[in-house]
Length: 382
Ligand SMILES: *Cc1c(COP(=O)(O)O)cnc(C)c1O
Image (cartoon, rainbow, N blue to C red):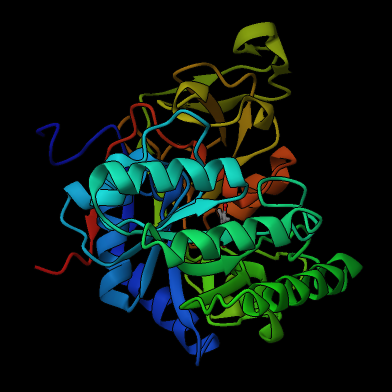
């Protein structure tokens, strides 16, 4: 068997699922434009292939956090609308301005840097303004907002920037009944009023992330920004699972067992012997570890699927490998497949299961996958 035909470890990403999720989100947010957020290497799914599938599925916009991500999308040939929202003072906006990327300013200092870049590039920069409606992360506080808006209106009149958007981000959208949602939306509406009063008429006003897109139609405005949901994972697991929202997980992570051995009762397993066999059993060695993004805290808790049966992780998760308890079976051999996570349709765990086993969110589970994991894409359109 060649290494190429049966890799040790593989993340298979179904781009057909991404396209279907994007189509589903377009349907949910009918009347608004749709942005698919592909930051952090497409939430661990691979930025470029996911970006292409998102466009094929009907994404009007792509969204990324940092400038390097936006420029990489342009280098790969993406020419559509593209918003970037996280930069630190002193970063160069020149290339981004020339590449027709929508930048975000949360302060007059940032606005000044974008204006300077636009002048040095000799172009009119597309610029969106972000207001902090209550997340206390980036964004202009409402007290400074009239000043930022006035300065941006000046810069627009002098031809340095075109204010293409006004936006904000929600803190508690995965809890639809949380009072912060209404409070933030009210602050947002007031900020939009201030912008309109200064003569700004942006192309897009936007507030909703995935959970708000799925649970809060009143927050859709002109554009919704969906990340996690486009990958087919539930962004509000207390409200509904992926299937309940009409979504399908795109990523399946498998590994082929590197060792299988029958052991007696009383065997300590892996570093620290945090697990000792309480009966004769069969142990399987999965060639993935925390160096690949498998959370170490999942030891003695998480499960994988082998031959259609769940097998629990036993003992510490190491940098490159971990052990699973297969039970007293004799139909499992070296090279057989262990499914760590996937759609759940064949009984395998989902990213949400791993999130619950490890006290985190599905966002972190998939985004951390990396290191040595090879990604393969199905449903590629030629
Ligand atoms: C990451 C991010 C999103 C996407 O959030 P999801 O919950 O994954 O949809 C949207 N907007 C901003 C500003 C983000 O940073």
